Image 1 (cartoon, rainbow, N blue to C red):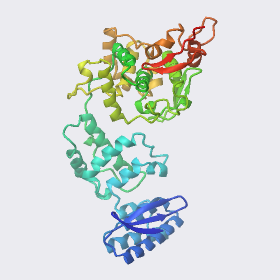
Image 2 (tube, rainbow, N blue to C red):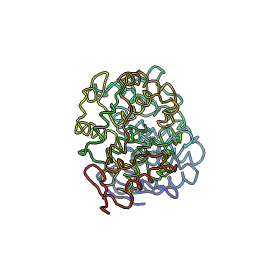
Image 3 (tube, rainbow, N blue to C red):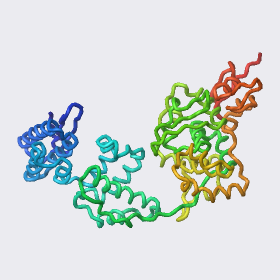
Image 4 (cartoon, rainbow, N blue to C red):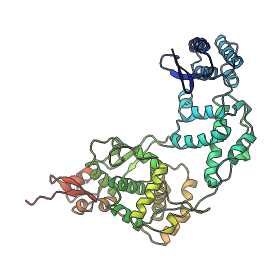
Length: 454
């Protein structure tokens, strides 16, 4: 146990349990002698709570007692800890109410994964934690200090009214969903409150924006544009031809891709529904060629230096900039109106679904790749898919021939097709049949073959 004075107050570094450590802050207004006395009392309480089997409550109780700005509040929280240890207070009802856990505190426990760790069967690990954390922080500016036991419908309405006016109806609905989810967790499994104070009609209806997707001709321009770094073109082409969520693709590792057989597996994803499927032949070949440029990297999609790509919001801006660099200027891709928003990286997934349906692919085939759980979700793309079919836009060109024409044009077969001798050509074998022992070196358009003169 150590106690030091910082700009935030008296910092107490405390261990509770075998693997749990924490930093707790006491008011800086406390004299050093009083701070030391409280620190010793907190250390004892943490030890007793853990020994009594209440590790899940120890951190919250100690943090509340440490930050108490009055002696009476400090003593009441410490009395609660003693009653909990002696069994005078029920562990699932007393601590949360008595310590006055706030909306922001529970939201932080949810976003940080602590609730999942405590109740893995009831609280899923958040895979959109970064995005939701920003939104929860904004909500916390209005309702963060409201104790959950005193939270009312008026608090939720106040938080929604404080949101920026320029937010879309869909985004406002997502904020409301976060409020509702935190309060639902407070009911169960946290058991802080007995019922959610929000009525059924609280959730905004939201609005459906116009579907946006890339035309095959626009995709070809983007894939051939040497001004766009190869690492981004491979990502864009992959998303438009395989239908993954951008977060799923950015987390994809080479160990998840079987280039020998042209198969991808996605064990961890948003819906917790592991799936695997056969890659598009041109995608498998392109990945095999791209793999030769970065053999030591663990992630499939990285930036030029091998680092992780930025988050989805920054990627959307980069994506639109790359489209303009490639000469893609269709106005509706960049408009923002009440019915439309500028194209996002997520709309490459919409491109996959739309063009697949337009080409006559079945819902099951699409769902195997996208992970959509219902026909209703796929059905939202059908109107746009019919338009694409009527316009005879066609399908996307093979990714390998767009990204690596100097290599793949020398081989007539596609990955997964049979060679002249009847053997199956996979990504790696096609790569070697195209390149052999001649070697590769980077070029402005990706890879360039070193041709032998013998």
